[in-house]
Amino acid sequence: MKRALPFLAALAMASTLTGCMSIYKLPPGKPSATLEVNRAVTAWICAGTPAQRLSSDRDGRVAIPAGERITIGANYSSSDGYMNYMCSHSVSLVPIAGAQYLQDFETEGQYCNALVYAKTDDKRVGLAMDPTLYSGGPGCTE
Amino acid sequence: MAILGRWQPRALGKDAAWRAWTARGNLPATFRQTATGESMNRRPWAAIALSVVLPFALASCATGYHSATNPLLGISGGYWDTKGPGSLLKVGFAGNGFITPDKVGTYLLYRCAEVAQREGGKHFVMYANLPAAIADARTTERSVASLGGKPSTYAYILVVSGDERDALSVDEVLTRLGPIVKPAGTKSADAASTGKGGKS
Image 1 (cartoon, rainbow over the protein chains, first blue to last red):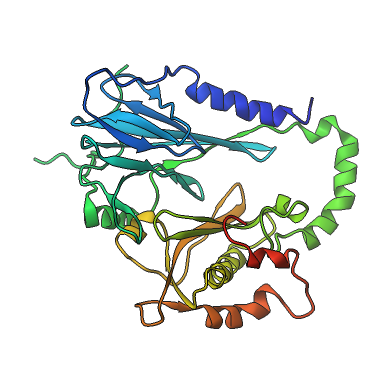
Image 2 (tube, rainbow over the protein chains, first blue to last red):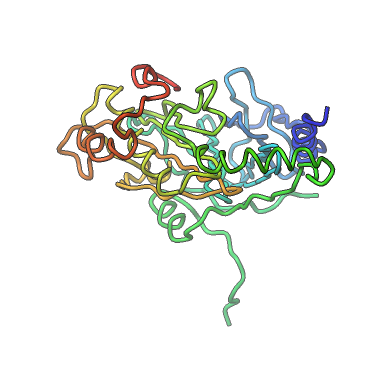
């Protein structure tokens, strides 16, 4: 039991980060785009609402609203048995209806980022920076 | 009078994104750390055992050049790679608290060359991250950062022909770094891993 404590602590903290979030559902009739979320993190969205968790399908895809500025974020936590590490980052963008996006999550030392890229037909990278992408979101409503 | 010192969100579109990202020098969100281990004072036997084991550990347990999925040695870290997005390959190396950042950088470059060779290439270009790959901002070395005293890094590579700008030669990298990564007389912990595709 004692050995499991660090991992249970990490799990509890991960739950704390996301436990209060409801699951986002795209309002019916709203134009939408598709986001492929990073499965290593807890992805969330603010679309004129408090932060809500993004629940993806089997392929990791989820519908997000298009034509309005939204914030897409990621919460990440890990533990090495001695320390728990938590990092959260978000960006905002205005998705185009019908377009496809990819949420990436990277850690670099003590920093993390969760950028969202537009998917393209380019075979080299297959991604492009979205011209509406902002670093950091406008904030979520309480 | 302009408001100075107040952060304003800035558009990160197309090439501006990469310039803004690199100009900032660091990624925007930082890790928070909290202790979760138990106090050693509650378990004196553990402290005694550790004092015996630690000198040996300090001398010999720096992460070696092996796969992170190695069932025995992978607990200390190692290299890994994944395919995508597009034609890119993401290659990484994670070390423990006993390996130096310089060595992690060397191991990463060597592993990039091995992965390019595995994919049938003789040359490859390296990108520090996805924004750099999108902007085709190539690099020939990768910085290494640490979290909790454990250095790790990654890079995206693309197998290319030899006449490409900033292309690195697989043979040249393997020859130059081979004596450092795999000194004569040492045996690879997972020699078979270089011959497999996909995640290793």
